[in-house]
Amino acid sequence: MSGQAPPQDETTAPRTGHGLDYAFAKTHGLVQLDETGPPHRIGVRPGSDPLALVEARRALGGTLDVVMLTTADFDAALARRYAVSSEAARSLAQGFDADAAIDALGDGAGVTADLLDNQDDAPVIRLINGLIAEAIHQGASDIHVEPYENALIVRMRVDGQLREVLQAPPRSKARIVSRIKVMARLDIAEKRLPQDGRLSLSLGGRTVDVRVATLPSRYGERVVMRILDKDQALRSLEALGLPGALQERFRGLLSAPNGILLATGPTGSGKTTTLYAALTLLNDKARNILTVEDPIEYAIEGVGQTQVNPKIGLTFASGLRAILRQDPDVVMIGEIRDPETAQIAVQASLTGHLVLSTAHTNSAVAAITRLKDMGVEPYLLASTVRGVLAQRLVRRLCAACKAPAVIGPSERAQFTALGLEDPTVFEARGCPACKGSGYVGRIGLYELVTVTDDLRRLIHTDANEDQLAAVAFQEGESLRAAGLRCAAAGTTSLSDVLRALGGGGAV
Image 1 (cartoon, rainbow, N blue to C red):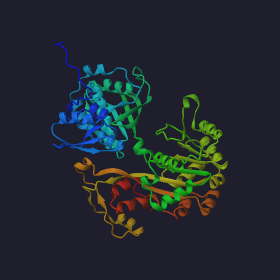
Image 2: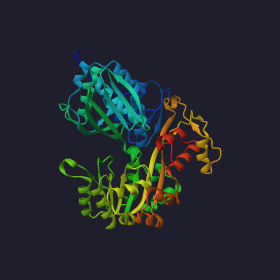
Image 3: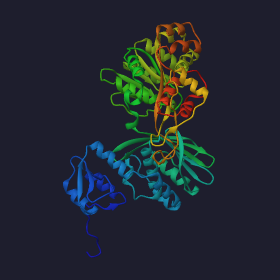
Image 4: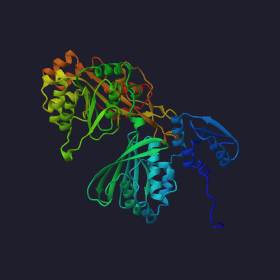
């Protein structure tokens, strides 16, 4: 008996650099809210065992100040407390032992894993978990793992811009990529072909999906992990930041029983998020809502979602034909990208369905000409398209460090044309609060073209894009006007507006 350690009670609370051990905090519903004390402020989840507070007091030393939290607030506090920073991940990378990391390449993918439960695992696992946790904490949309001859570079896309977060030794390339592929249940032996996978992770009660795509390159496989955070994506129309008048017009278009409503813009401009917000608004259990997407980014309760799979012949066109036999009221197509899909979408709207979709065009009016280029007859467009919403995302200036900027005569003339005389425009400077970027988060710019009787007549007569634009913005402002007003309000910088929209063009 003398050689055996005494059994440890399940309520024992070992201490870590974060105070209480994560497993203890999560299991017993306790989280330390600050670094000061005693008294130590402890957040308590509903239904927690009061005896766990006794052990927490013993582990922390001193008295406790107990704060009752809701389940959602507790989960958020737990994630904030234990999320691993990029600095911790960088230190792990510097001390990374590739020979030891091979032991980490085991099985174990499949069920939803909690990133914060594995802080004592092998270095490669802690490194990847730390990167994903920091990406979620910073609101990054993608993690890029890029192998080169002398290093493995990891970058994150935050607010639309890529930032380098660490460099790992070149010998770690294969181990890190293999571990990611194991987590996404991809074939680690296949390194010659691109692969796509998906994994589900938890960050202190917050479930996040990660889409993984690999691509062979000269120095190894490149990996891009797209962070799909449901809490960030499934927003209401109000949360998207649509101006009041434009939002009311958009809601009016969504209330139509049939027709086509398009969201346009380049990749990464938030089109899918806007359509999901529209579907959430329409999802009142009185409608049958079906989608065909490539890929399905977020699951929406009460909406039938179909994944495109070209390998077996399930394309946008064939999927759309199939769901039209499912008695839908609302149909959402991930993208109108070919003439066949465009023709079926038009026919669906003519037969009494409301069709939502996206297109990659630079303006709302250009979406109408794009459909004409796909072979849709002008008279069909005139009778089916209800409206087109074009959008861009610009970065929001950091309130702590933004500073007044000097603008030239040409830029000032554009503000004057909008009736904004001598506006105060700000520029990004950079500070610790925004990690030196000068920006925190993003905001949308929108232009909405409603197909009125006048515009419908022009479409029917096959008018060109300039003629359509002359009539289209009689009810609302263009993207450029929205961007200039946003800059004049001090929300973003004029340089970021011009970056998103380009330097030329009329107001």
